Image (cartoon, rainbow over all chains, first blue to last red; front, side, top):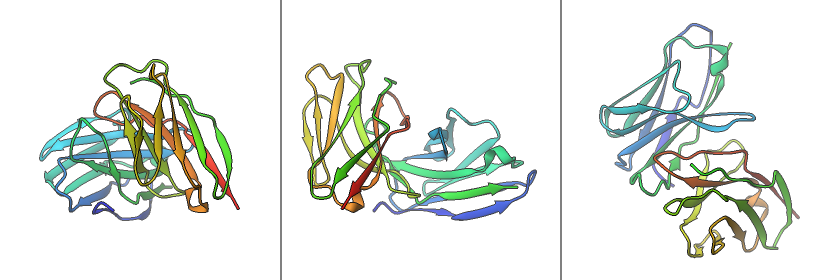
Length: 113
Length: 108
């Protein structure tokens, strides 16, 4: 399995609080992604990164920001969590954008009350 | 990205081959077909991908029709651990677009 971890694995928070999820990889892959998964929607891309300090928006980026200060870490921040952001969040990595054989982390289950 | 159409669900007997169809009639010439699966509550797992030739690896075989408008993922000897949601994805750019997939239940 690819060396990719996510923390925390579970989190319960209240509406309006900031939340940061961390994705950590030991594979030195250039590309990293954040997806969310909700019933009836499958996985949807939030943000992705194509290198240190290089990020771009996905299809559901509103309310989220990301940062990548080093190759191995990709942080997802909910500036002010809302109940609609209750979801399971998956991080993924890949070494080559042209192939898209992405390796996924175990996921973070976030509940916003 | 080209859209894909998969059956909602299917059952398979343990030890038998599971054949999962996928239609992608609007696929472009340079778009690959990818298959992933997701076992309950885990992250998606890459299975196989192909462009126009049939492909086989240790997990599965991928058969793509000559016109590339459809494909079939074959799990040669399904086990209970193959119970999962299987996603057929046509990659057009930097991201994977996951649909609803096919829920495959392998029964003893």
